[in-house]
Length: 97
Image (cartoon, rainbow, N blue to C red; front, side, top):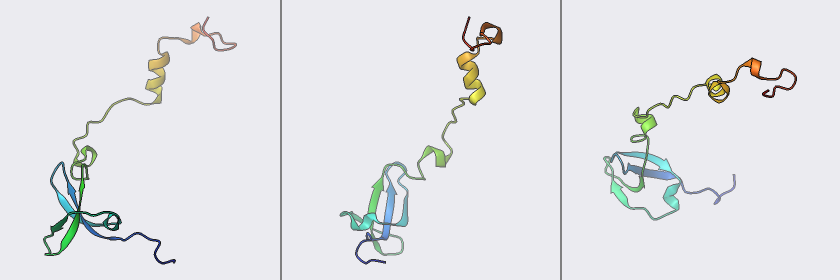
């Protein structure tokens, strides 16, 4: 493997701005910009990456998302062509009479 082509990969604390939750993980963002620091529960100081949405506040992961019922392909077809019957269509080319 070539040296000096890979970004710096290190520990970083991710802070969710919506819920306020924080968690320690590893990221390549550590070497790319100047980040503020925080003292973690283990006594070490880590850079902080502030994000707007994470798994702790995203509606899909928290279970607060409302499912949208759109139906399947048959319902979509019936909505589009539901008022027509087979007798109205010309059997030779499928066009309306």
